[in-house]
Amino acid sequence: LTVLSNNVKEFLIERGYKGEIEVTGNPAFDKLLKEDDSNEVKKLRKLLNLNSNDKLILWACPPINVEKECLDLKKVFSYLNDFVEKNINYKFIIRQHPNSKIFEKEFHIKNGLFCPKDLSLEICLKACDILMTYNSTVLFQAAILGKKLITHSHSPPVFASRFGLDLNNFISQEEFLEIIKSSKKQDFSKLGIDISDDSCDKVIKFIKRILN
Image 1 (cartoon, helix red, strand yellow):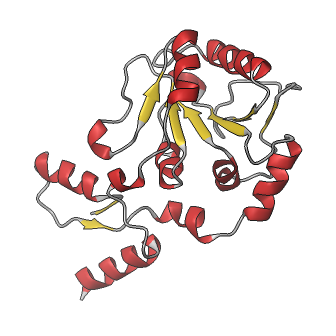
Image 2: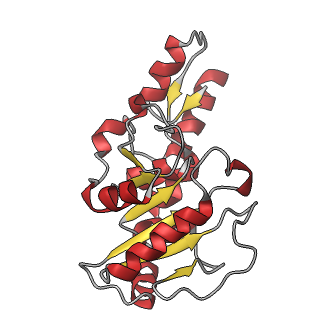
Image 3: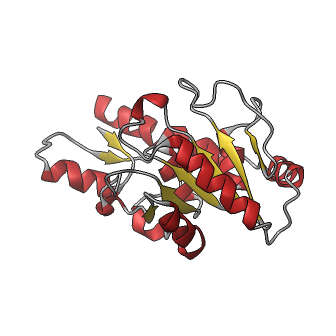
């Protein structure tokens, strides 16, 4: 079994897994670290008229079928939109779930935009300062980049604290206003993730070893 981090390995051992476990990281995250997207990141922030001191919030929307498990998504949009209306140094970008869109028709947003179809998740993550979502592996991707992590779940935390994510959850507008400015950037050292080598290469080496 190959896993993301030492934290995950320890969790599985505690739960009784008896097989061999290799910590490789997630090959799906390799693109996040390997590719230089700096020009695309600059273009996106320029499109939103953001300077170096301004903040970009990325809302990675959950699929529509989790509405009962997380905060009402219309409220989430309302809190977000109201906040950037009153705080001119903040803008936001909405990235809808690829398999289940919350907004059937995308519309003009005064202080934000819907993610263009040709814009990758990796570029959005690198361009943003804050990631907001419900419960997704995108939290780990943003954590690897040291972003601020905000969630909107009825039952926090969406991931156990042992996995190292510095999550800030809100269920009301008052809590949203409080955490949007007070939350701190993710401490990478808590994640137990090794990014010194390519994860895909680690998986291949592990497979070769167990086959020989």
